[in-house]
Length: 466
Image (cartoon, rainbow, N blue to C red; front, top):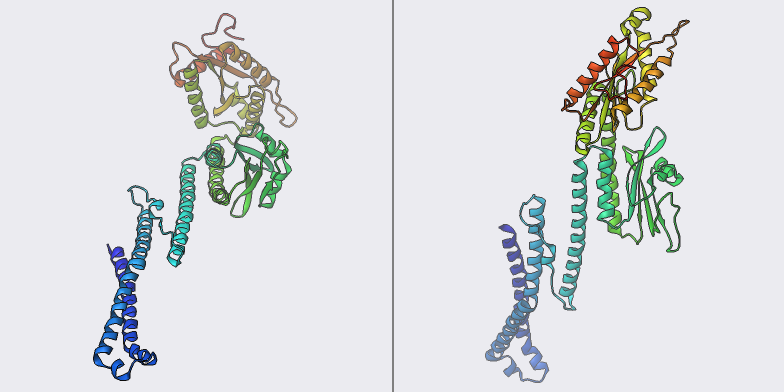
């Protein structure tokens, strides 16, 4: 390895040069000493005798040699330790930067234990301080890297934000936090931790100002000051609010609160997190918007067939795990082809939009209405028994029958036929079976005269055709 060899060569050269200078100085003193001897009263004949001169030179060289040995012992050894530690740190950092898979390099093993009051002691103290700062920076870099990797594994905005908050709150110096985003001039909560009423952040003026001005704001509070509960509901010492921006355009804010003073290292972590979170969250929100556009039927605003069937699979699996009921209502517009043939396809589109609006006004929160295609729709009713689903379908039927579609001087009125099926049921093991049973019930409603609700395997308290 070239680094230790270079270190040894440099150290030896320094010590050799010091020895040469010491010996040269001793030689100089040896030659000059006879002149000093004369000044001190020694006879010329004695002071300049060859024997006396040679003795002075030999004594000077001896002093130089002894000085060299002393320097090597008192300076050379500490200097080698400094050089070894520097080389150890250099090699360790080089291996880490090259992606070494070995054990992590421990900076603490490179500390110098020189405690002298001379320049070497000061050098060792400064070197140890540098190592401590490097270790803290390395920990911060590791935290930032781990956070960036963790966030990159998620495309769902709330989960991504929760990962960031977990790093800052659960593993950091903060006690509460939340992230909000701006959507169509409304501020919406993405995720929070440590707050009992995080939705209040959406209406707080300070948060809105941070977003609109695209800046950061830090509030320091006295121990006896309680901050407005709309921001946080703890007794914070510091509140940090940072705008989230993409390409200079703000789109959200991160709010953090701590009950103790936050140091510079934590603030640097927040700064780095803000940059990473801004980029990741903007990408996640864009991906979500694209997915929503791809999942929404452009005509009715309902979920399209692909996402609707995916949602049904999720609800069916959840119902099986929880052993709870799940019902579906399949329905389509009666004589819809006649509407298109008589009034045109634009009028038919208005009929479908009107029916979709009438149905979505009836279903419960958590229910999903899907346009399967053409004039056929599906309502997914988690937790609804067949009796519940029958009642909901009846209300939807009345709402559709009472709806009037404007069309020039002659408004259009239509009726809708409904088929209901539910699980658990011995004959229903998959979502395909569930939809098939609802389809059979809907066609039974058609055959019975249309504009009615038929429930597959209806209990006694539900009429077969209503």
